[in-house]
Amino acid sequence: MNLEHVSVENAEYHPEHLPPEPDKSTAFPPNETRSSPEIARILRVLSDKCLFGQDYVRQYLHDLYCRNCRPNTIRANGSAIILFLGFLKPTGRKHLETLTRDDVGGFIEHEQDRGLSPSSVSTRLRLLYAFFRFLMERDVIHPDVLKRKMHIKVPDALPRAIDPEDIRQLLAVIKNPRDRAMILALLRTGMRIGELLNTKLKDLNLEDKYIEIIEAQKNRVGRVVYLSDDACRALKKWLRLKNPQTECLFYGHSARPLSYAAARAVFKKYLDKAGLSHKGYTLHSLRHTCASELLNAGMHLECLQPLLGHHSIEMTRRYARLTDNTRREQYYKAMAVIERGDMNGYYRFDSQLP
Image 1 (cartoon, rainbow, N blue to C red):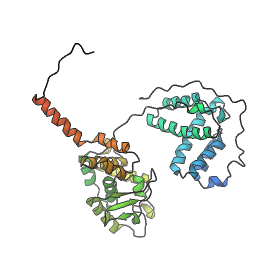
Image 2 (cartoon, rainbow, N blue to C red):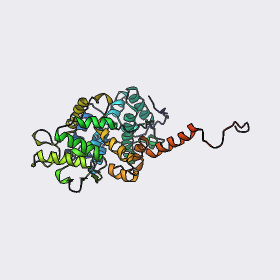
Image 3 (cartoon, rainbow, N blue to C red):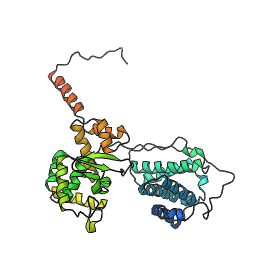
Image 4 (cartoon, helix red, strand yellow):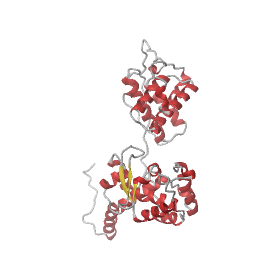
């Protein structure tokens, strides 16, 4: 695996007196967990597995909830903590106060040995460090745990866009009005699938050709995305057929909002029909394709960034590595000169140079 070596220092921390964990009856009132089913579910798993540190975990998850973190965020943090505490359980630990940097390194090696991808290990490590910072700020663990944080070297892969010819093949087999409208909307706007599935009729403006995303699925920042002519035509055709009583733009059986699993199944069905299932395309590839084609057509990165909802221009710049017409043109222009032998100057070995 392409992993950076993890070094672990012996930074044992043995406090003379371990402070007792918060009293369950006073530290966190039971009704506070009822507001978040995710927290209740995580705490139930901790209890079933007889893992230590449950009250500190409860406080941390509630802190995330109070900071308006999404359920998915709470779930991911809880899963990482459960895995880490489960790893420590065979050691006989009873208190989080005894946590050391060695334990973090051991957990990383354990996850690597299980065959997890570098990005998965890196994500879990990042979530654990957020939990450790919460504990350190409350004087629960020693600051040495957070000194010189460990990092996993994660491959910086190119976005997976769909080839232009494959796009034509895919669209050619989609006849269902709802499915064609959904896939064209993803392809032409660059929306995340969750954002489109959460779109309501009131968010769609076909006259001015845009969709208003009130709150982005990933970063909770609203934005506006624009619709191409072919996407507008597909959406108009779908709107003439859809149930006007349903407020969501796309729905499944019983007029319920279409789920991600159902949307993925629809996309896979058309990949199979177009003979493209072996190429590994996913729904998210439609977003990558939109970004790549807009850059190919000459859109500036600074304009593409807000359309995609990226906080950082560096996230958008990844698509420039995938498709950069200027770089391509400069390469072939220079190569033509080289092949003709029209270069100025010549190269020779200089014995004075090292």
